[in-house]
Length: 202
Ligand code: 5GP
Image (tube, helix red, strand yellow):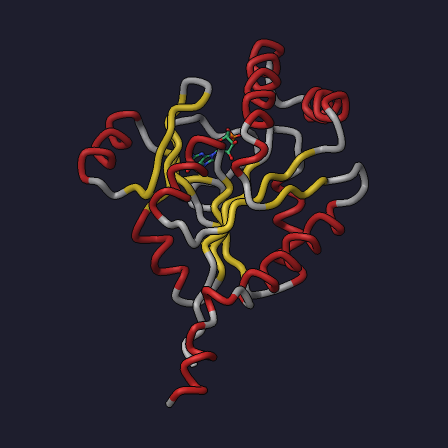
């Protein structure tokens, strides 16, 4: 029986703990792969080219747009971010693929791939979000303010997502487990299991 892997979008404001939750998910199950996006943003300390992102110039990015090699892309806080079509399709042959992307990209993926699953990851409340973002200490104050404003914009799209997962303070494990359980249920959705029905009419 052909196994159809899922395209899963995980969005969440900076400070929602997406990175930690997704790392935890990869520890729990080997059935997931995380897509590596292209970006024109400069790497943060500790980030590695080809692991966190493919860091490219604006010219290179615009060349990708022209050549239509991106599933979706957006300009976010002054930088381009985009999902590379070929790499995602290749990964989908073996695994459920997670796109960790912002809300505009998420909406575009859903339009192109209605069978994709959209998950919004949120901290318990706005105060926690702000504390986490400031605690990270990797960005100057104006960038933090911009990202906080952006986070409210993301939450405004709440009802366009299929699922909402709350990442409690210490709870990266629980949030990862929620995503695993959502995936397990989604795979059993009737619209994805038509081959089961067909077996009764062979
Ligand atoms: P950061 O600069 O913090 O790594 O990412 C900023 C935002 O861009 C995050 O919300 C992240 O999920 C989003 N992002 C990362 N890669 C992509 C992508 O390929 N497409 C879109 N639309 N958003 C992305």
